[in-house]
Image (cartoon, rainbow, N blue to C red):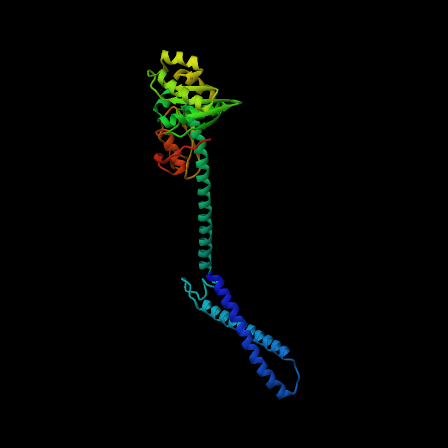
Amino acid sequence: MSYQRSNGNGCAHFIVGLAILYVVSSLLHEWFVRRTRIRIQPIAFFILILVALVTVGLMVYQIIRLVSHVSEQRRLKAAICPHGMAGGATLSLCLACKAAAEEARREAELQIALAERRKQIEQQWRALLEQQIEVFEQTNLKSHGYLLNLTPQRFEDAICKLYRALGYSVYQTPYANDGGRDAIATKGKRKYSIECKRYARDRAVGRPELQKFYAAILEDGSHQGLFITTGRFSKAAVAYAKKVDIQLIDGDNLMSLMSQAFPSASTVYKVMCRECGEILKFPADVGACSRTCKSGHQTRNPFADSTLDELRALISKRSPAKYVRGTK
């Protein structure tokens, strides 16, 4: 708004100036005609006056620039460099000042190149860490002990990851108020409701839990239910599952599915040095906390003592408590 107002004021001032100039040129025109007896149209006289004023203005502008340039050159010639030479630094007459300026330019270029290199290393470090987190998770998902140490929410994430790897399209329900199932999977034209329970090996899932899950299956309109646990199922639960066609997957069967979905196990984790970009290898079965790269930088192995949430927090720059799972 202020810009438009200033534009409008500028146009108004310009028009007023032209009007005043036209009045003045009209008075001069009358004087000129009486004085010289030369007949000339008022508008032509006005244009001549305008051209003359513009020409004089340009000449004055050029003269001011020339005087300013000469003054600046004199000032530069009079400036004494640190080595005692007049105009040494300002006019590049001093070889020592010239060498120092060249050194400063090279140092600035080097700092720019180092900053760009650090940026590239940081991007590569994050990309490699993301890849290795995926390897870390797939390797550990085949461990019953690892699954038992997960939170219930992360256990649900792991089961959904398993079924995606097995070729299912999986929608993960919210952690709270999930409607009696943790996920809904589809494969081909068939729809499956999934319920997950992270129980100890000797803890059994009972019939009441299956009955509650069966209500969710009917509500979803699923063809079948998949009840998955790290523990086992009671006899009553097994008998009920056969009647209502719920597939039961206990701890042992779950480990078989994990091995089927993630057959290759990594023996090393790759970690990039964030200082120089060198890639170091840490044995997966030995919890080495850090190593020194060839450039002498100490590089920490984040896979030695970090949980999956803590590893993800390294990438997202958030604390593990703020990590929010995304659904696919």
